[in-house]
Image 1 (spheres, rainbow, N blue to C red):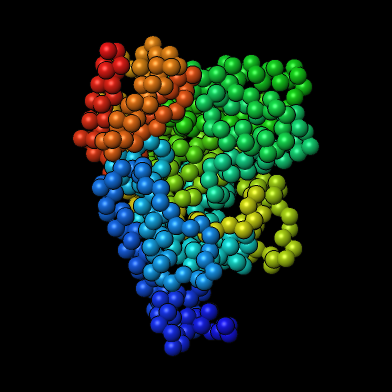
Image 2 (image 1 turned 135 degrees about the vertical axis):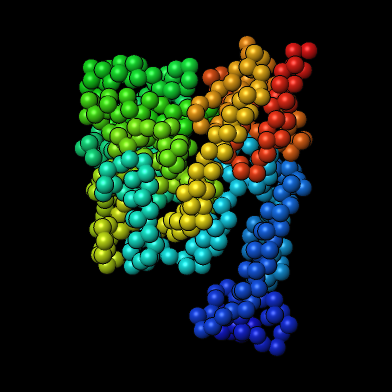
Length: 481
């Protein structure tokens, strides 16, 4: 077979009919590629049909049929590729279903879907400014805007990252370098019992001792106990071990609790340690004037993680690490990038965190927020809280231990349940709800299985919430018999 470079690159038709279906692997730089345009239009139509038929199937599909995971000997044509895509879509979790209430994964914002496509097509790299000139500027401006909304001082900024786990790790590495503890492996991070598991990963990656992450008990509302935090800080001083950072949580994973940020900030300042706020769940509430009081005190932090993907629906992934003094990111991660031209403004994005090559995820966040506007952002935040409050009112608190906080998460378990009975109850109830196309999760919390609902889905109706509350209440009555 003679290799035809022009046909391979640009899909130039020869005499074979197969060329009509052969999508060129690279778009032509010489003019509009009609085959590419048709392919993207067909793929978009498939996606829109998938969205539009969400109510016709469960949020969690039973279908697991998948195409081959490996490339064929010959490259596939456009229709075969679309068929393969459809198989994957048919077996995908459906966050747009009104009954998708299990996790912090809402339907995607429609503008961010389009931005994801453009992001892929641009294929710009936020490693360096010359590889992403307009996007690098956009990232700096948007991080600055978020920082101002969270009451960080003028000049604060940050960096986009692929998820909150990476944002939290970046924050702790920055804290360690800022405090001159790079070579100190016995430094300690203090956080609450209900803090996110990503902190344990971060401490392991950083090479801290096995007890490098110390967890502080929470009170009856799921908030870190500042009295025990003070005791632990005193213990560290006695042990002559430095505190690398205190991590406060603005929105815990199971119940949406918010630690007392101002009290913790004061303690961090007194002891000269870094305060990081893991606001992956709750920090977005600072964007609305009517809900920003929920995260009051976040502006006292040295760094904040915020994940717009979790409630605003920005297509994954979308996380920001915001830092009070943005120069500390460059100090911790700067290498000079000797193979790139100097940045015209500030530092290259690849000098501000762990990631080198980075996709233009900031484009999704920017366009999604532009679509929503401040009124749309407020509506998403306010309605999520209203749905949680409605469900909480529906639940029988005489029969259920309801665990919640001020945000849009709620978990519950039968009163006086033990480990075995809570597991049976939660397993049976989750399956019953799945049979009715309502998906909840079953986390373990304080030794018991709970049923957890995340009320951030804008498609969830009041009628569905009322029905869900009734089903949960009935499940308690059934278990008692």
